[in-house]
Amino acid sequence: MGAFFGANRFKFGMFGLNCAGGMTLSSAPERWRADWDEIAEVAKMADDAGVEFLLPIAKWHGLGGEADMWGRSFETFTQAAALGAITKNIGLFVTAHVSLLTPAFAAKAITTIDHVTHGRAGINVVCGWNPDEFDMHGVTIDPDLRYAKGLEWFRIYDKLLKGGGEFDWDGEFYKLRGLVTDPLPVQKSPPVMSAAQSGDGQVFAAQAADILFSSMHSVDQVRDMVQRQQGLAAQYGRSTDVYVETQIVCRPTRKEAEEYAHYYAVEHADQGALEYFRRMKAGTLSKSTREANSVSDKAVLASVKPAERKYPGIFPGMYPLVGSPDDIVEELAKLEAIGVAGSALVFLNYLKEFPYFSQEVLPRMKRAGLRL
Ligand SMILES: Cc1cc2nc3c(=O)[nH]c(=O)nc-3n(C[C@H](O)[C@H](O)[C@H](O)COP(=O)(O)O)c2cc1C
View 1 (tube, helix red, strand yellow):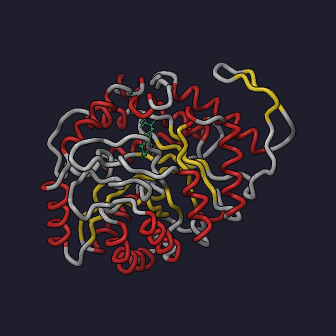
View 2 (cartoon, protein in one colour):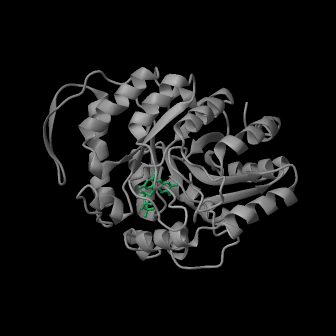
């Protein structure tokens, strides 16, 4: 794992700064606009506060609805290089749609960021779900093959970064000649994350990733997912940490936090965007999900069907942490207790809300022994 990960028992990342709307399905006027100067400011704040990493969303198409969440987005490799140049310690993930990039391109681009940042680059591998995005590139998502193809892609990328001379690749999906990359990254092995939530995605992460970044539909589902992931990774002689995504609504009192969450995630929930997401996601479900193989697969299946949710404006699979600073720390401690190693933070407006989180929650995490 990259040096920037340090020794905190529970790690934090900042998720979705590069996209309008961030990760919130809300039309509230103060929602995140992905203005570059604001992104840069939050990145610097997170760096100063000791947050471990910045994690962008790979997006080419918005979700429509009232606010067109993600309709505006910055490309993740170029953004990571730029943010790396204005920060000091924080890790910079790129999020790579593997079917849109050759392994040789990704290896060189990651290495470039790793040199610019003196060893702070990481890759989040995503195999994609929205056909509308892939149509822009003339690429078709095959939900039954995406992880097999992704794994072969990863093996080539990984071999390139290990050095050891030119090689050819004769695989099922890739036939490539004279593969080589120079320089090699500063880190021996830039951290690999895999963002996925199906059982098939877990098998992929067990073979390729240091971190499975996944959805959290309930405590029981994540407890099961962590245990399953540990078992799967052990089968390959590896270990894969599990991180989840958390929506933070933190106010001095629980009542204030609940009122604010109600305002932006109920009154201003973008139902049109949610419906579009469910429709597109339902069309490319992984095989394990269609067969409802694991607790997580069942949760994904349920999440693409219309259902009563307390906060419809909070993304399906995003765990809402709504309350006072003490409430938030209590919930995060519960996650750590079931084996979750970290979480990627989401706020309606990162610039307005992160300072309070940093001031009130981070010191409490330290007192709770969860962070140094
Ligand atoms: C926490 C999380 C973050 C994700 N981030 C992205 C992303 O940035 N871009 C994207 O196209 N897909 C993203 N995905 C979806 C992945 O592309 C994945 O391929 C998709 O969820 C289908 O695989 P699955 O059935 O294993 O979940 C994300 C998924 C999860 C669970």
